[in-house]
Image (cartoon, rainbow, N blue to C red; front, side, top):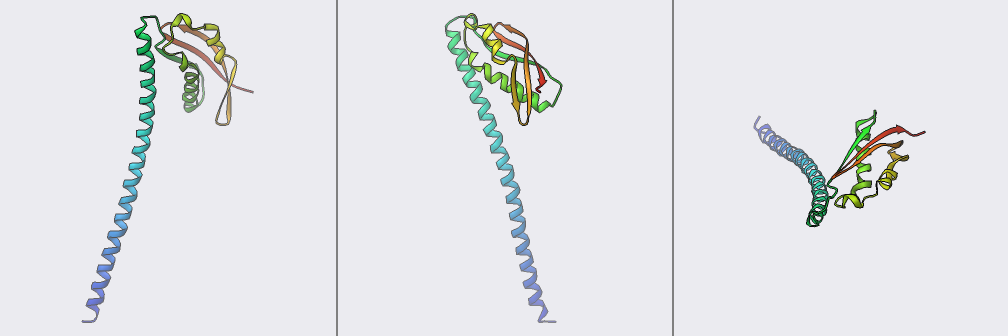
Length: 152
């Protein structure tokens, strides 16, 4: 019996040490996963902040001129499909018109603004969509109504 006690103590200490090491490794993996998730969210928010600050800078430059300028772009899609595709289509259309932000409204050519996306084919992932401009309203906000149909 006396020879079993030191062996049991060694097994107990070894098991305890292995348990602590495995637990610490698991906890470290969980914490590093969360930190990576937070870093991705921070990068995404920094991109949004950069976009907003660029927009603000253009608007402030135009305000100094005291002219009627384009302040925002609103897109209304006539689209029945995947919500993620709708978001991507809206984003793509806004990117095409971003260069107009901060410009004087009377210097924007409406016909050219229509031609930018009217009758265009937009490819998102493995799907193609045909864009048709229904209506465009230009004031301090550029409002665009676009009908989206599957191409083909």
